[in-house]
Amino acid sequence: MMFIDVLIIGGSFAGLSAAMPLVRGRRKVLLLDTKMPRNRFASASHGVFCLDGKAPADIQAEALSQLRQYPTFEFKEDEAIAIEKIVTDFVISTRAGSRYIAKKVILAFGIQDQLPDIPGVETFWGKNVIHCPYCHGYELSGGPLGVLATHELSSHQAAMIPDWGPTTLFIQGKHYPKGEQAATLKRRGVTLEHTPVVQVVGSKDRMSSVLLEDGRSIELQGLYVAPTITIQSPLVDALGLVLQQNAMGAFIEVDEFKESSVKGVFVAGDLSNPLQNGTFAIASGTLAGIAAHRALMFNC
Image (tube, rainbow, N blue to C red; front, side):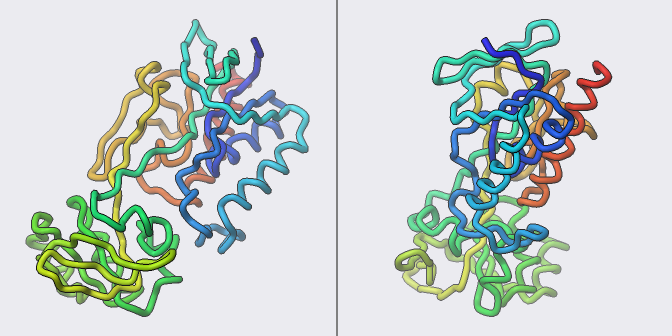
């Protein structure tokens, strides 16, 4: 049984950022990671200050290399599968059979994207089938772009995209914009396509067009899709964490210091951020790490 100050679960941008203030505060930190980050489908991270265009894996490797310079930091490739709070401490069990006792826990293992069940969407996901214009829009700009409606916020997404190129919103026969929403789309020059997309077509690593139900094909330089997000973790259930819902799915409720409904459990990254990108993940990880250190210092 290993005793540590803070156990961080998840080793992508949020988890790595959370570790830095803690090890610099000379606290004993263990980071567990399965090396399956949400951003593994993207070849580059864009819009991240001083890191624009770098591969997510390279950013993670550099961060891990820097953290390993601190003697109180330890990394293990393993999966936390069970957690129990005993008085004020947490007992964590892993798939490899290890057990740890931690004073504080930071959850930063991310979420799962549920993509529309349309052939080709998953194939080109993270290439030029994407979700965030600030992350990837510049590289796809100038040509025709599409937005595949998946929920009520898709119209808002479509109203953003014309800054990057002429935009078509594929409403899929059910996500009809109304009232002010429809007026905004018209003002922004968004074309509405009522016939559903039935396939995303391309070759190698890029989509080139979408095939509609009536047989028409529309060429696109990129297709925006807002996935439904889900949290699939026995840890969240075991701790009984309070969740919040929005149109995209669920995320964990936290306070202004990233502490969850369970005292001593902090949450960073996409798990707790309604707005999600690399910069927000790094910022929330840093805040969670500082908050956990504060809680250790002041026993709060």
